[in-house]
Length: 135
Image 1 (cartoon, rainbow, N blue to C red):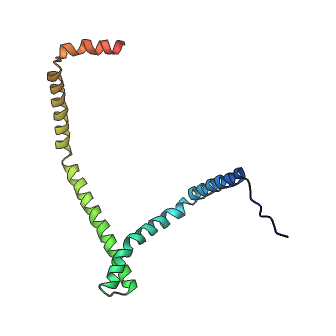
Image 2 (cartoon, rainbow, N blue to C red; image 1 turned 45 degrees about the vertical axis):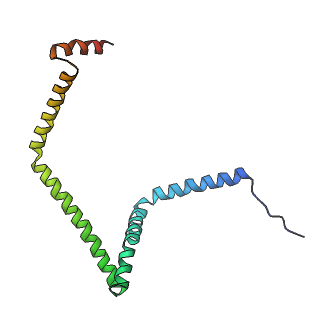
């Protein structure tokens, strides 16, 4: 006698899938402290794999040495980027007063251009502003 395969109805399967997605989302939120470093490690491993393969095949380094060199290269590149960004921020901080003057002057020039382009003089501006505020 053949056995009959039981298939759950569509609404039951849909409910189980939705509950499963909700449970997975909850686990991801709760495990964030553990998952974040693992995801970053996975991304760095994927990014360093071609460099490591190059060092192994072309330079004939052992796998452990190729891994160490690729990690040191990554740290050097990230350190170089941070140094360049830091020096640019330091230069900008030194030039901050001059930058503020230039911004104030640009705003003043823009106000003068608007007054000239739309033929607004200071006495003509105030009635327009009061009309706009009353509406």
